[in-house]
Length: 212
Image (cartoon, rainbow, N blue to C red; front, side, top):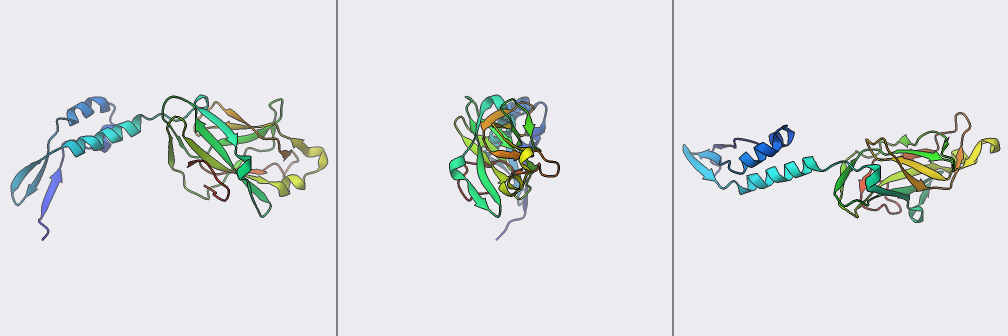
């Protein structure tokens, strides 16, 4: 039989994580007692699980975003997968730092020449999958599915074709970029510059056929 009752605690993990004084509240929360009221009686509960939830919430809130300096970025060319005129390849992000960091959303990606000149338009964001937060421990890897249209570049006038040297890759929300080797043909002709697409970053190394 279900017994009517209600439960409350003096502070919540969500409130702690959002509060400017989160560290102070966290220490107070460790001494907080949770009460429930069943049948008119006040019952004192062990608050260790509450403290654990609070600790997890605060820890998650303190993990920084990955910067260009934290990451090594490269194209996993051996995992490419072609379909309907577009070749998809994982763009890998590995945490080379000594701390955990997170990635969330789209990277900024552009093809560049050996002199650093941008070739064509930045990769168009493909919203085919929802964004999620990817947590990278030291040595951990995430990836974004990068699409390359060999139809656009194949139909490009010869005078407007350029071979790229690298991809300039901005981690989500960052203003400093990494470089990934990428020696593919690009197109600079007006109306034919959107030959790259990219999806949001997903967890784990990318494998052939996995579009994020």
